[in-house]
Structures are given as structure tokens and as C-alpha cells.
Image (cartoon, rainbow, N blue to C red):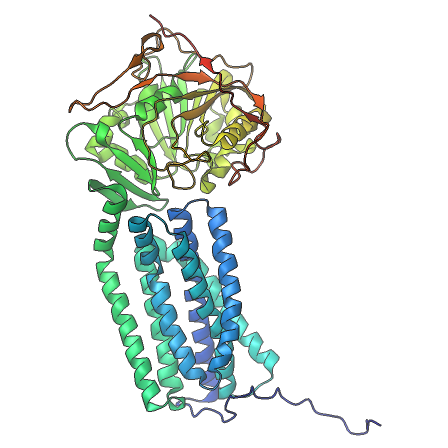
Length: 583
């Protein structure tokens, strides 16, 4: 029978097996000691989230397909944190020593993770295994922190487990918030990816070492204390040396990726710009990379820009809007028409515009368009600009010269809402020309863009241009191979209009086009050194729509809102020439 006459007192949770029940002898009062432990939790959480975001950013930058890389990094790290929590049980007899060793290892791995991933990509050509390995190792170490800190904070002053867990997780979550905000707004703009990760590791090692070697120094044996001092000094020395050598490492790694003629490499607030090619001579040797993806190749860019611009210029074209195209090459083609009154370029990254203005080779390639008084530049997000009042001043032609549709940050610029805003900015009878990615290697992405334009109420004429020479990655996955396993050999475009189906043609008074051979004849252009630049039949091909019978599923979504079934249509093999060139 249970005696209920005497109220029973709730006892504190029993001490974990193997842990000492004797409170630690601290150099400060218990209240101050608890605050120092919670402050350490705060800093460690901020550093841990920076490591996680660093892996996410580098995974998307080096591999591409940011949705997949985010899923891999997050799922592997969360699983590894659970593994780390279980492994932390082995350190309960010596929590101070265990926590100090874990923080030193975490600082070393997290601080050098960015450099190791970049080196793996530059010299091995593959960074996925390294990304998974670092995600798992860092996750294990982060997962072991909280259990050991729980033991340490209980050593200062015993309290119920619920209160201790609440305090620890409150500090952990607030620290994660600070780390998450510091990464994009402080570390990346001021220090960059490599140096930012190493500075974070330095802070991590310093804070963890101070907590253990000062606050809990009496819990350490003499041998353990010297081992931790040596480990932390070694970690700090390695991170300091890596920080000093980071600039040289980046230059060497860039040469391994882009070749030996890297002239400009700058990280803007939007992306990394890399310009390669000789400082003198023909600008056709120039290559411009944005976030590691080839944006402009001097050898074949004229094929792309002529095919993008000139079909849309057939008809009224006094007022032209170029979305993207901060390199000035699309505007160059537009301004070849003497009856154009004004061209407005809306470019997100002012660094691209500045480079196109000031670099002698790129300025020569775009024919110095930024000196033309008819050209105006707006440095703003194209989606936001179209939603504003400035877009209400209607345009005859809109040229969408934007990054490949599969790149996740550009997704909204291929959405139904975006095309609806662009259509609203058209004058009656106006046309929109859209770059939609290669047809042959990424047909689903291409036809999704075309169907999204139709869903926005536009009439379309899909077409492509051949003769693509560049093999470096330009698409979302930073690989020269597309879905079909072959390098892209074409560019896909869509000409669209609001009132009636556009006619895919160029006028007889169109300025001379270098990409068109007379009567579609095969021709071979040669550089000044006599080497052939191309040997292919020139083609602007119209693509009739046809239901897609069998096609592998796409890797990523291209547009967030498409009312037509994804990948409903594809091109057919029998294509016919869009027009006969004027004799």
C-alpha cells in the first residue's frame, strides 16, 4: 500500500555513470562560470553554422545544382550530429579534455574545409566526395559539443536537466542566428570564402581552448593540459599560415581551373568575376566567367548575341530594353541599328558593368558601347525593376540576356510572373527575345522556358543557333556535359510577342551578320595565327513543338510557376532553316 500522508520531493536527475559528482573548483563564482559556458555555447553555435553555410555555398559554387547540394550537406550533417552525440558518451569521464580536443579538431577541419574543397575541385576535378566527407566529419564534432557542455555546466552547479537543456539550447539557437547573419553580410563581403572560414576556425579554437584551459583547468591532469595547449597552438599556427597563403593558393588554384592567363579575379557583392586571356592582341581570346561558369567566350560570342538580338529587331525597335547583359555585348548588337533611339541595360552586378567599361579587351569586344550616349544603365535586379514605375515606359524590344535557366539564383527570372511583367513593358507589336539554354543537351529546361512564356500569355517562336565552340561549363551543374552526356553545341532562344505569333526573320537592312554564311554554305573562319575557329554549317533553326514521349527527369526545376506540364514538348530532329539570307 502506498503511503500518501507525506508529500514527496522531486529529486534531481542522477549523475551520469562515469561522471564525477564533485563540483569543479573554478577560478570564478559559479554564476560567472555558467555565463562563460553559455557564452562559449553561443560562439561555438555561430562557428558551426558558418561552417555549414560555407559548405553549402561552396557546394553550389563548385558543383552547381544548389538544391541538391543543400539537401546533401544538411541531411549528412544532421545525421552526423546524431552520431556525434552518441560518441560523446565516451568522453563523459573527462568532459573538459574531450570538449577541448573536439573544439581543436573542429576549428582545424572547419577552417580548412573551404580550401580543401577548392583544391579538390581544381586539381582532382571532383569535389563531391570531399563535400560529403567534410559535412560528416564537421557534423560529428558539432553533435558532440552539447552533451559535453551539458556535463560541464552541471559540474559548476547542479540543476534539473530541463533547465540546463533550456539554457544551453537558448544560447545555441541565438548563436546560430548570429552566425547565419554574419556569413553573408560580414564574412563573405569582407574576407571571402577561404579567409572567412579560417578566421571562423581561429575564433572557434581560441574560445574553446580558453574555456577548458582556464575555467576548467583543475579538471585536467598536467599531461592533458599540455596536450591541449600543444594542439590549440598547432591549430592556430596552421590556420594563421593558411590565411597568409590564401591569396597565393587562390591564384594557383585559379590557374589550374581557368588556365595560366587569368587577368582579373574579383569577388563582387553578387558573384565572382574571372577574366582570362592576354592583355593585348585580339579580344577574341577573352573569356569571362561568372561564379565559375563561362559567360562570354570571345571566339563564339558573336554567334550567340547575333542570334539573340537580331530576330527581335525585325520591326519597330526605337526603344530597346536589355535585361542582364552587363558585358555590353547584346547592347553592341542593338546599337548597330542607327535608328535606335535608346537602350536601357538592367544589370544586377555593377562589377560586371565596371569591368565592361574599364577592361581594354572587354571594352574592345563590346565596341565601347558604354561611351554611346544612347545607352543607359540601371544596376538593379531585373525582376524588381520591372515591377517598378520605370518599366511603365514601354519598349519596342526586350532582350533577356540572363544566365542559364537551370542556375537556381536565376530561377525567378524565368518564371511566369517575370514574363508577365516583361509583357506589360512592351509596346503594341513589341517582341521579347529570351535565352533559354541549349536545346540538345537540356531540352526539358528549354521547353519549360518556352511553355512558361506561353503561360504568361505570349505567342512564341522557338529557335536555336549552332556553331557553339566553348566546352567549359556554362550551365547549372558546372560541367561541360549536359543531360545527354555530350558538350552543348547550340544555344536555344525563344522569340515571343503579345499580340500575334512573331515571325522568325531578319530584315534586309539588318547590319551584316558574321554568324551567317551565304545560302547556309559551310565556311571556316580563321584567327590571325591561321588556326581554324569553326567549321560548321551556320544554322538558326526553328523548332516545332511535339509531345515528349520519353525523357529522363530533370535535375532541377527551372521556373517556379509553370502552368503547362513540365517538359511537355521537345524539339524534333527534322529542323528547317528559319530564313534564307539576303543575297
